Image: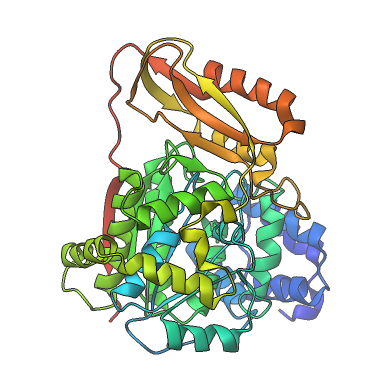
Length: 444
Ligand code: URA
């Protein structure tokens, strides 16, 4: 069929009516979006139709390819160039820890990261809380930095998967995030474009993840692994639990501070261990360790020795920030006003509504409600108690970092935290392990 008969509404109608789109139709729509011939409101209608009716493997592959080739596709042709990506979570700051660890072990890390999406925080928003840190550089500079420093962290550029850049911001504000084809195409169009030979993919599952159940997370892991293999990438997918924040900090600057604490070997155990697992996976995929376990041992050593912290300081300096933030946290923007939330009764923390925690951080200004919103780096939460912890009545559960003008909202938030966001039980609850399962697929 000639593409001259295509119209946005006919393609939207087809997906709305649960029919399969052809590669030509998908390509025509995505190209139109990038050229401005298809409007953003038409794209959001198609996104909702995809969200509701899904896509076949063939349609997902076509969408991924169109989004990938909407921009430049790099290829470093170097087996040691490995990236990691997460499907998004609450308090997920592993990139700031694992990237310098892996780089200190000889992996080249070309990280093109995202901004906050829905209730989840974004790596780019978080790192931008370091004044002067440039997340938008040209692709030429990106390539040069990677070759010279072995580590580079940027946001999406207009050259890399520009279609995703538009679609990502539309999904963020139109309730169309939690979709396996849309997440696969979004993540893989960026990751395949950045020229890595292998990718470690952290697929989150649980209340604070886009994939609420393990079955959905496994389906997403399969979709992502198969897409990577189609492009000859070595792939590791790891399913991790997102039923509570990762680490203790949620909020942009607060998460940077916690990441630095981990790099100084004094951070929370959960985030430290999972960062080692992910970095170990990258080292293994790069061929620098014969097993994942040996990769983990190398990662642990780089963390213990301070080599990873040094790499992080270099990364900050190379991208225009002041590495002194690592020794002087007052250089980071943190809200002066704090409010403490205490336990209403004694017991064990048995449930944390993690998606709500992410949304409460967005309410404070730590994320966006509409695409044009500016992110407030200063606000967030530090949790003193996590799932399974025993608490006494009146004991500190968390601290809210906010502005004085938000006092009324924060008072209501305190009530919500103790009445519904955090739940308590008389007996110690059974907890899911953080690392649920992993799969490695080598390209031929
Ligand atoms: N991260 C992305 O880059 N895209 C998604 O759709 C979800 C998480």
